[in-house]
Length: 506
Image 1 (spheres, rainbow, N blue to C red):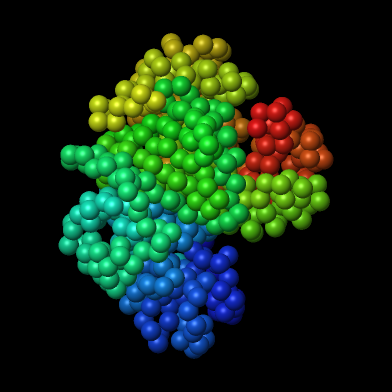
Image 2: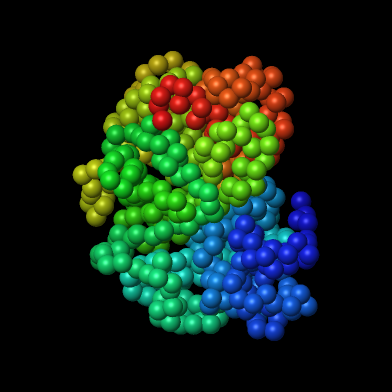
């Protein structure tokens, strides 16, 4: 798939009107100043003849521009394109955000996508204006900026937590991208981003620290519904939900590439507040990327809500719940198992079954992360493949499906990551006995954030459709839902909510 070129007139009109809706969608490079800005930069609008528009900040870096110190283009949410598109460039961007290049190099990135390094470099340069190393460098610069302005971490620890291989590389990149030293960049942070006392507690390396960050998103943002979704499904020992005067806090243990983490999230009007204790700070970029997907933080809510609200039957729900997001996941094995366990049973029954697995097969958190509130990691695929069928109750076929799926994940024959297209993911899952279209497409929604999934056979979806005045029979709902493409996942989230409200679960 070849990306359509940016339309100059549309981009310039957005810049002229300081339109925040386009922040993160493209970058404006100004030849007369040598800087690049977000579309809503409050500085004087540059002359059209001085502007060049890029899809990524990495392309602007490659062309010799540095980031604007006034509008901080690296502070905006990422492009929603990578959620919608399934071409090689989009899937590469998802993996780069997850830290794949930092962990596995360009070779690992290319292997995951099924291309040679040369082919991948050519595709990304043609599509995005920068190669994989430049794109990964821009991602590291963005991570570093956020840590510098949001925490009191020493710059040396920021360097490695952001994904840099050395402090020299970190200093050079910050200087080239932002035109400042790390210390200067931290000092110029806007008041809203200044670190507060106690944001970071750094222990001995291997680095274990507690970090608090705000992960920003586009408004409107209905993150509270995502927290409530997670709360209803929270598994004792692995997850915890706490209510206080500030709202709802969701805490859980997470298995990352190099070690474990305990994270707590709270939804705010335009951000998610993430507090995390990590066994290895090098896992922070991956944790941030997963949390962004968990809350669908890079979505374009205005475009989605506008499309859904065109239908008079759905308009009241959109007006009452603007900025609805798709709930994601924090672990692929966990999500696959929970989806299978949840087939054709209630949320409560699925939670009980999952708790049994976690209690008997879960892995205790390392001592450095000991937390009386949560203490167990979700079982590893190897443990599930060996013992899940004996631990679970219920139909033998379902228990064997869990074992079979876990075994395929453990031996690598079932890859589950954001490098896949929806068709590849659902095809690989449905090739396993016991997994049908409902489970495979539900996983496409939760693992990939696929924006156009509508599970017409789901009983809660049908109940929600009836509550909102849409057809409730599968075929009729599918026909009616076609008008909402490519946002049927968001339609389905409204339908799920309507069904839950009828049952008074939200």
